[in-house]
Image 1 (cartoon, chains in turn brown, yellow):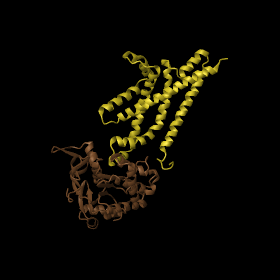
Image 2 (cartoon, rainbow over the protein chains, first blue to last red):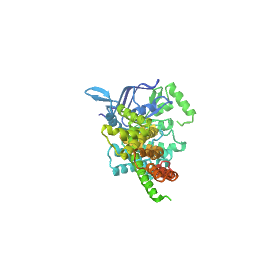
Image 3 (spheres, each protein chain N blue to C red):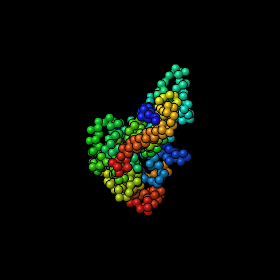
Image 4 (cartoon, rainbow over the protein chains, first blue to last red):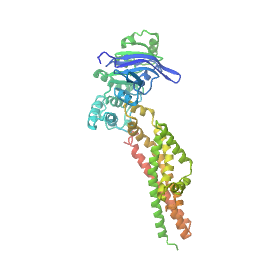
Amino acid sequence: MSASAPIIKIDGISKSFGSFKVLDGLSMQVMPGEKLALIGPSGSGKTTILRILMTLERIDGGHIQIDGEQLYHMERNGQLLPADERHLTRMRQKIGMVFQLFNLFPHKCVMDNVTLAPMLTKGTPRAAAEKRAMELLEMVGMADKAKNMPAQLSGGQKQRVAIARALALSPKIMLFDEVTSALDPELVEEVMNVMRKLAAETDMTMLLVTHEMGFAHDFADRVLFFDRGRIVEEGKPDEIFRNPKQERTQGFLKKIIAAGHRV
Amino acid sequence: MTQWSGYFGLILQGALVTIELTLMGSVLALLMAFLAGMGRLSRFFVLRALATAYIEFFRGTSIFVQLFWAYFVLPFIGISLTPLQAGVLALGLNVGAYAAEVVRGAIQSIGREQYEACTALNLGRWQGMRHIILPQALLVMLPTFGNNAIELLKATAVVSLISLTDLTFQAQVVRAQTGNTLVPFTTILIIYFILALLISWGVRSLERRMARGLDGVRA
């Protein structure tokens, strides 16, 4: 595969919840190593895209290619069949996700939260998994809390552990779903700092859904503005935030600034 | 003056039988609870149907009749059980049906976000169940399991009807031989109560041990 092929190729996907059409024939591509910010009003479908990529929601129509392979379909003798669990398991190895509410395992200590999946899904020996976990916890500044239980941590600390947990599987693509939305304001910065570092130091492909416009500006190579399940406008952060061309983008940013978010 | 010490020995023997029945019945009930409780959540229709049929049937019929059936009817189809085997079978299957609903409810009480974390970390269905969902659900099940175990203990009294020499049976023996009703029945009342207390304490201390660290205070 050449370096210029997209790592994510979304082709005309649609998704409805009941009668509400969240995504309607959406197409987009992401290049390897790209840092993407998805912004837009609530219900515009940006979180749904992440959840679909993580196979937490199924699509009603369309195709998705990850790293050159179909996500929800399997190619058998030139035919496209619906993916079975084995195919999905293989595809999920390429993708990691961090959730708005952390979703840590409350009955496992920080270390076990991070080592569990590599040991179970990749057969990594405990010693190697713990060594890697310590490096990751070091990177997110949580090494000294390795033996703590999640309930003993602040929201920001939990989220940093959740980031380390997702990284432990070394995915090619990381999805961040409003990872600072549930945090107290004074804890937002510590999580953002970890993610800035991550973006600067790794060549992972990252998709970020956020309402923090300032963060989206620093973090992303490209910003997509979503409204009603469609991409209304996309471009470099400076273009979108300083010079939005579409009326809806302007209106959204104005509202966000009025609500006190930094740009 | 009645020689009570010999009769107390009889009642203590009965207590041992009751304890034995309770323990063995609980093991069977626990096994059935997890089989049927998880069966009800299965992806496969046949498993769901089997589990539902078992639960509804054993909750919907009397423990007396189930016991008589196991002891008196099964021999007609070539299965002869000892009173103890019939007692364990009936008690285990009966209480297991109630506990199966506890298992199902507890598993379903674990939030969707835990299942989603399992998917995002690429854990298989069984891996997620075993390492993430069940350990948390177990804590939810425990208090009700304690209830079920006490119900089972008390239900063991019905096996005296198929001549198993449990507490209740021995109390009736003592009553027949001494003509005294107050002493034997008060004695076994107290013994049942003490046994139930022991179950309560056991379950509660298990609960405390398992909850350690979950709330961030008791770690």
